Image (cartoon, rainbow, N blue to C red; front, side, top):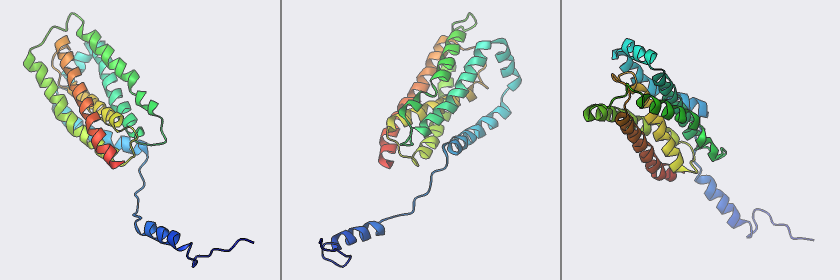
Length: 222
């Protein structure tokens, strides 16, 4: 008949001490909000400066330009959709039970954005613009995109990123897309190839910075 080992036996004491030590080190954990709530929260904050800038923009002129150039409309739809889907993909990528293939979520809208922008820039009306004008667009995207990225990164830190660079890169893409969408309200000239190239550079810089930032920040939080 096997010997009975109770809680007061010498063999049970190390286990009891281990359990006590683990229990003392426990801290309350705040439950994460739903992915949809976090996505909508980021979009709401992003929409605030967008709405404020729209109040001082020449919306009538912007609508007139878009009405005369279907490529601008498709590019605007693509950039807005990319901001939403990339933010969703970034947040879903911080959930360990979600497949990394969620990172492909913004691919269709990104393809639409790029295709429509290239088509518009290649048209006859897309004459090259001055370097100062193109750089002003880049500054606008970076100026809004950096705080948008930092805000989304703060939201991502509450998750557990198994692929931190991927999550950070998607956050940078979402932020750049949102900033570029707002820029469309102020873009006083048709898209040109050199302007498009610098827009792409700004998006790439934010996405790359987000990936590097995510590799350090999100891995540390995991």
